[in-house]
Amino acid sequence: MSEASHGEDFIADAEQHNEWWSDDSSTKLDRVTGLTPRSDFYQILKNVDDSHTSDDESLVYSIYGQTGIGKTTVLYQLIATLLETTSFPNQSTDFDIASSVSPRQILYIPLEESLYHLERPGDGIQRLTKVIDYFQSRIAPREGRKYVFLDDITTLELDDEAKSTLIDAIDSETYAFLTGVVPQPLKLEDIHNTDTISTFEGPNPLLPMKFIDTLETQGIRNSEVESELAEKLKGFRSKDLPGPSPIKTVRDGFKPVEPEVTIDDAVNALNELYFEHLDTAEKDDLHAAARDYLRKGGVLHQSGNPSIRNELTKSNFLLFLYKELAKYGSIQNPENLHRLSSIAASRAGDELQYTEISDQIGVDRRTIDDYLDVLDRGIAVSESHDYSLRRYRRTRLYLRNPRHLVLLSQRQEHHGFENDEQQNTLNHEFEYKLARTVAFDHAKRLAYYTRTYDVEYTETSTGLVDYILHRDGTVLPFVLSYHPYTEDRAQVAASFDPNTGQHTKSGTEELEDIEYDAPYRFIITDSLPKQIIEDRDLVSENDGGELCHLPYWLFLLIC
Image 1 (cartoon, rainbow, N blue to C red):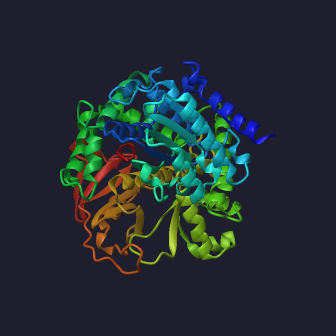
Image 2: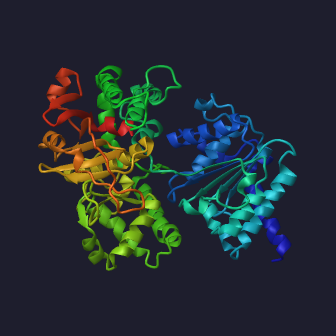
């Protein structure tokens, strides 16, 4: 095949993927317009709209996430929102950029699907730049902004020279959107010729679907209240919509450096949310929905068959481990990433000695650290360290997707959770493992939002404080009280001493001089004490301080 004909093939392929250039309809756009967008989509759209209204001439916006997590769907939803020929989503009418772009201003290239990975090293980026040039010179209008969507850009294995070539191909009136499986290859702002780009956003992670996204995209138990409750929850999260916004108040109040909203405001908002803004039926529905989420949360359901969904989810995850993460981390034995993920499933949230992990995997501690770092960067498995230890000899491992916990556990352990439908089999032990893992994942999201350092744990004289968030001395401790482990949880929370914390200055072994304070201790529970309900107050006084009881579903909602 000649050089010229080879280049023409890539251009012809681009024309096939951009049906809107010649036809107002697109089968792929039709599919995504039938899906309810997740919250990540609205955050991306808001950021892009902010750049648009600020008259940023050029933008590079990058997104990363695991294979099958929904990156392509989000890109298509953005395209559908931008196009003046489509009306999606109805909820996006407040964004100036929505429905403002003609079809010939948009280029979409799925690099993996378009076989750029078959090119010799360095040739793939040259093919891509020729396609972009063809779009800019032959398809797009001479005036006006252009929008370039490059899906699976990590297919090209970009080095600094290739990144520079890509930046040169994006002119000063283009918004470019890039997706990949890990963050590092998407970092372009350090390239020497980036002064031609006005704004860089990201790389931003696309995580497994959280609880509130699952509520809004897949519904809840009672269809009669489903749409009304979903709209109410959406309003609770945003100050831009009419009505109260207690979830937004809670999250802002948990930020250690939010001068206008205090931790007391956050706790008051929790009380109002539970006792005033939701009726009994709605709370019952949310309680049931949280248990449903433990079975089916974390994945986009594109098949009605539970067995097929399980196979797709597991295959995507193993493909991600063995191909993408192993290549990214230069891992010679990718099966060890699989083994560590399986340990995280079988020992979900249990304390593990690093020497124990090293012996089981058969490699030294430094290699284990490298593996866990790669898994964390891929948002596959995350660690929780001891709040009160300066040197880490122990860890707790958590999978970030609850479905992976099911699929990588032994059959006898997850019996009754083989699919996402409620079954007659009771398995409280495994449900507790799922609840513990899901709460950690949502605590990580809360830590990201509140700009706290990490999610840690500590053992007190009376038991485990499961999740601890802290920044600049402000400490938020959470104790999980979920059946069958519910005894003495209030005592554990009360016995927690925030001053046991030891943290080093960034990049050093020198301890920070911090005065720790935990104004409230939180108990995440699947069953509120009777006295709390009778008093209509989530907060109770205790010798160790003020305890705030959070229904499990309410904790998931605020994260």
